[in-house]
Image (cartoon, rainbow, N blue to C red; front, side):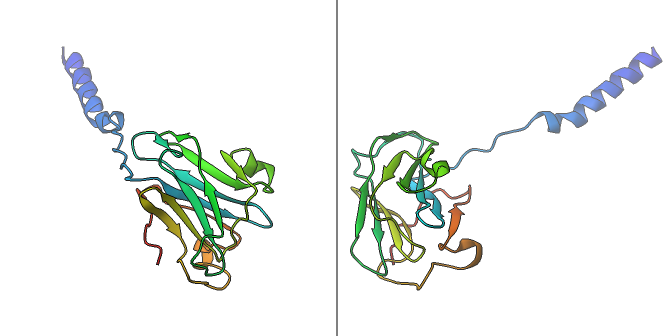
Length: 174
């Protein structure tokens, strides 16, 4: 009888202390209010791409909402390249726009391959829809020299990923 109580108590204590390890709640995902640029690739030569993320909780029809990428070169205030985005972007998925002369690793994941002139590290990129500016990399009308930022955040010959905690873009172009 004494032995049975010992084992029951040991089992109860083991279960009690194991409970926190068995319960592993999944944190709620923050819902984005709009699409945003989640990755920027500006590699050597024409290895360039933009990745757009949809975390809005619903699929987005890119054509119906007139989504487009605009590239502003060398401090210009006029878009010299505009790429109209097409198709539907599912919630939790990404849409990749790549330069047609990029390496196969980039082209293989691209949703849209463009022959338009792509950006360099010192150009401004705007993601826009029918409501206005959704996200911006750079500053409209400013030529920063050779790049925006420095170090790991530099836009010259670098790949930049937005942090997982980001829920929206920067709609301020200045």
